[in-house]
Image (cartoon, rainbow, N blue to C red):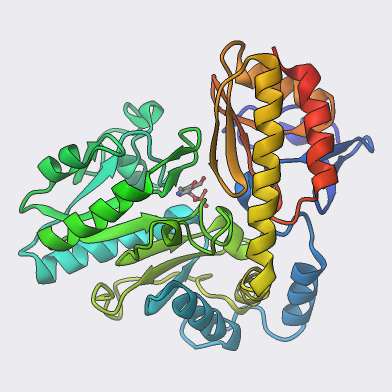
Length: 387
Ligand code: PLP
């Protein structure tokens, strides 16, 4: 593709000069026929890999039947997916969205509505330093990403930030104005920084005692990414509000705001959207959920995650680098020297896609179906790129 055509794409991020034309499983191919082993998968989006037959079949079948009947009516895949998500999460009501940011925006609105009705007008939400909740004005204000601090002033008010894994700080930040605490079980964009299971359990207890909601943003950690269907299962807690995205659509734009009966207080007119819950993407969501919820699927994700962890630890030890963090197939390798962005750029030259969320961190989010052979191939391609 010529550069004058590419020039019309708004410049919102630095992109390397390659144009991808095809994807299959763990592999991408560009216009020059070069193949790339993809350990990012659209930022943890393609949970079953590129163009998995199950997603293609669901799209084909549903596209021929009904794409979007308008959000004014029920459609069959939307209802079926709502039931699958509600039953598997232990929550009650689901509103489908088109992006993770929109799901979190909805969670913020829902919490504020609940605060207005049930907590004397409380509206503040406590979030954590380093968190990432999206790129709408409210979700940027909710995020604890340092680069967002000076962008797009004035900020949406009502967010208080505390360090992750610091219960005393959280306790001190909850006041009469607080309506909810909002957390990621693992901060993905911050470089794969886990909330400890003990902390999550204590936060659940604290939010109950103080009468505020717990919102878990599982847009990156949900749908099997950590080896359980939801990240909160590791700690044995359940939030009042849960947001999902990325893997839920297996590559198509689908996200969800999920709430307990108690927290689910929207009334007609409070929330909606032209594309929300359309039959086409909901049918894909059903296919993804039915696959990921198969009994052996998550066993395999945990086994593959253990293998990737062990291979990364061996690679790191051999080159004097640092720890391997994360869970399941959301992992990071800490570099003790060099620049992770340069390593990722060198890896791309060798036909490997990894990501550098921080200058000292490489992140790995392969398809949940990635094979041991593909992991071995990834290590072989990454090794010569390490400083
Ligand atoms: N929340 C978390 C934890 C995320 O990782 C992301 C995206 O990376 C988002 C929210 C925003 O999702 P989206 O990019 O679909 O708006």
